[in-house]
Image (tube, rainbow, N blue to C red; front, side, top):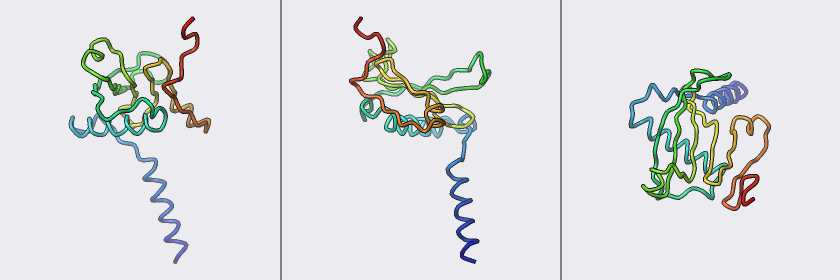
Length: 140
């Protein structure tokens, strides 16, 4: 009997960790809250130097035009230090989230560096972007 309970717990736990949510099926308020949570969790995992509680958030959408994910929809959650930076699109960081799975796939930071999250997770590498990181060719 103990083994059955343990097996059921493991099955339930694995189902909970692989749960995907279609963001387009949520109402706007729930979707915004979910996207904010996903973006904040992502930046804290891959680029915590760039997060601050007082950043201004902007959410946009994008439909992939070519490649393997053609016609797939993305939400882009960008965070800015102030209104002036929103107008110039000078973001602190932005996170790309698949609409159909609610999984973050990319993060880019103000230095121009980014992480393809799906590739990083597949490879098992731990990647962290820091404010001191500079893109290749910086200052040349």
